[in-house]
Every structure is written in structure tokens, then in C-alpha cells.
Length: 122
Image (tube, rainbow, N blue to C red; front, side, top):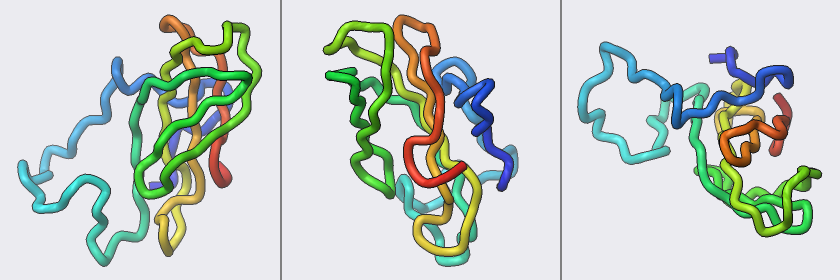
């Protein structure tokens, strides 16, 4: 579970183009709701892409388990532009949340412009 795509050279993959595969042995209905962890969970890998607005050098997104995260980044696009933010948890720890950080990539019109850690450490 410690393997994540947090390397700054390749960023977080665009999950709309390369979705994470479900394990072959996973039951079709596991009986858990989205982002509900069974009591014996030691780590969690959560990946998602969302649309967001780039306003005055800041992007705000909502990440499950953590909530709202706003981060500052300088991009060569006009304020008010719509961007895509792909995020993925990094590392693992025992406790809540069961991960150490969140890495993100920001894309505009299909081109990745930035990637880095937006919460915790990767």
C-alpha cells in the first residue's frame, strides 16, 4: 500500500483516462458505503478527479475523509478558469485518516500544468 504515484516528475495520473482496476477477487457488492473503512483497515488508497475553479491563484477541492482543501498555485491561465484536479492518497499510517498525504495534478484543457502535495506529506 505504500506505493503511490507521488513522484513530482509524473504527478497523479488522470483517472478519467486510466481508471484504477478493481481487484479480480473483490465481491461485486462489498456491503460498505463509499469511503467507509472496516475496523481492521491499516491503510487506504483513494484516487479521484474533480473539476474546480482557479481563482486568484487558489484552487479549492473537497476530498473524502479530509473535507475541503484549498491550495495556492501559480498557473499560466486566467483567474476563473475551470481546471481538472486529480488526487491520490500517499503512504500509510495507523490511525485516522489511514494515509499520510494527498498528491494532486492540475490540468487545463487536457494539459497537466502542475503537480505536488496538497495535504500532509508524500
